[in-house]
Image (tube, rainbow, N blue to C red; front, side, top):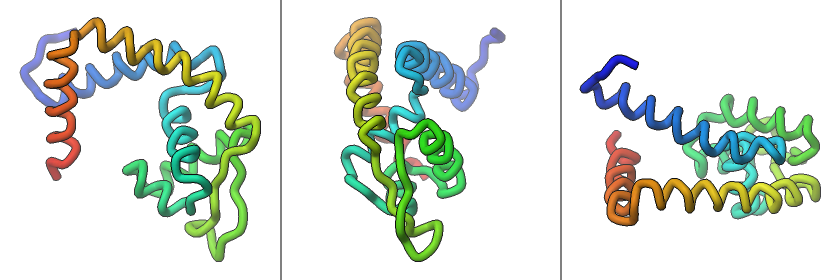
Amino acid sequence: MLPTQCLCTKLRRATRNVTRLYDDALAGVGLNVAQYSLLKHLARLDQPSITSLAEAMGLDRSTLGRNLKVLEAKGLVQLEGGEDQRNRLVSLTPAGRLVLEQALQAWEQVQQDLGQRIGPENRAALMALLDDLEHIA
């Protein structure tokens, strides 16, 4: 990799590397980190509309819709009701809840390993910086 001082490039590289760690850990249950995050949000929100789920996750509806189709095809989520596509309700299926439970241990292990690798002070500083960057726009 070429060295760079570009913040965007450095952030994108770091994001890809961290995502790969989570994806590798979750592969055993057939999920990637984006799918795990979606299932986790669904469990917390308990049958949101597509629009409210997209807002909660910080995604546009079209991106969310593509991800939901994959999970629906796997039998992990179901879409029901609603006046139109934006207002359809999304919920976890029993299979989705089971996969989420199975994925939790793998996710927690990566969280712990990564936290240990960077150390508690760096983790706290990184979380604060990421909070700032999350609200920059």
